[in-house]
Length: 201
Ligand code: SAH
Image (tube, rainbow, N blue to C red; front, top):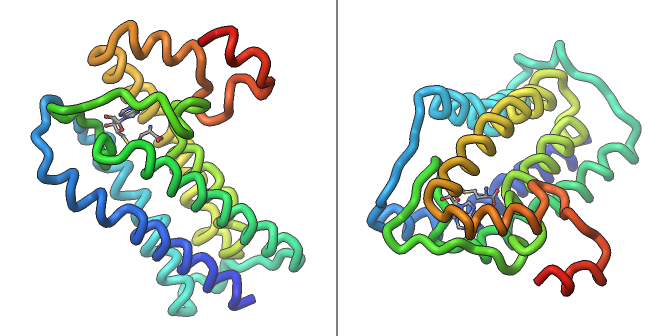
């Protein structure tokens, strides 16, 4: 159904609107560390392809139609609900991380370790949001290539990135980050029980 494609593109626009102001400001920030590998640059480029250009080709041409599949309508609506969740988490993560955000692995001169807001529960809310996104994508774009390529690529990117990012954070913030790791989950909260929480503060 056309509505599901439209929701996908609205979500793309929403992410651009949420990120644009932070992206613009953070470029001007002085950096004390940059760890950008060719491997990561390649993965980021490919991710952009599978998140943007392949869906664009799928939505505007017939080139990929041979790989279409069709899901029941409820699956599409599940995709819509998931997409809204992905956007909420994405927005919260940007609101809490502010100028400490960067597209690749960087530490700015004024870098602050954020442990509040959504970061109180999980260390990687933006990647959590992206997990939800790549699960929603094949429900909204019902095509083996436009729907699934992003998911497959993100699985690889996620593990490479989190490993390198946590190493950089540990090198920079040392025990502060080590303690922070103990009380948080990566993309799923470590504890859902409220009682526990205060005892460990
Ligand atoms: N992994 C986080 C942030 C992604 S942006 C998330 O999924 O939400 C990547 C940059 O965020 C890294 O270059 C690092 O400098 C910064 N970063 C990651 N966790 C942080 C934290 N808890 N506090 C401050 N900066 C953080």
